[in-house]
Length: 228
Image 1 (cartoon, rainbow, N blue to C red):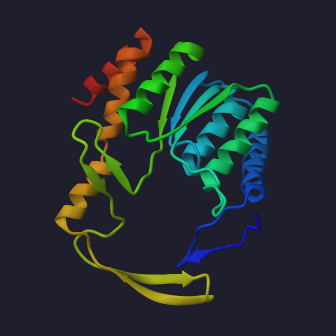
Image 2 (cartoon, rainbow, N blue to C red):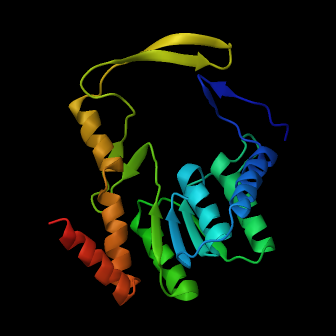
């Protein structure tokens, strides 16, 4: 496959495996130069393939010597399309982590679903027995509710009044004015349903019930009580 950039607005919709691997290698090198730290030994990263989630996983592995399980929803390459950047990122991270002797396993699927949650719990029980740190860095344009089956679509819009600013058309090399109209009440409600914390709560409830040690459960309860 010959990989060529396909740009939609200011977003490149194609990814190159060597470019993603180079970016991951750069992050690993940076963490190595900062020295080791004492931290959690068993880490679960939900939303582990890009951005803060990937960076946290690299830091936990190469800075804290942690075993990590990553959860994400990424697409493999096919005859017509490249894989998603997160797929290439994770492939590069796991390849290097395994080469360096670190435990790193991943589960690719819808983290909002109960099936993926159950699969993660089973893997933790099998390999790690417990989790010391949960990093929730999930971002998604939509969510299928695991109980009701309802589909919610999130929106990236201002609230209350329009946003006016500049944007870059990378394909044409132009800087343009842009106006984004405020979100409707329905869009606000749907965005909260996707990213507002209900799924995080479901993950924590499940892990607290099935995985967390007594000490971690005690700490969670203490933090909750401290809020009140």
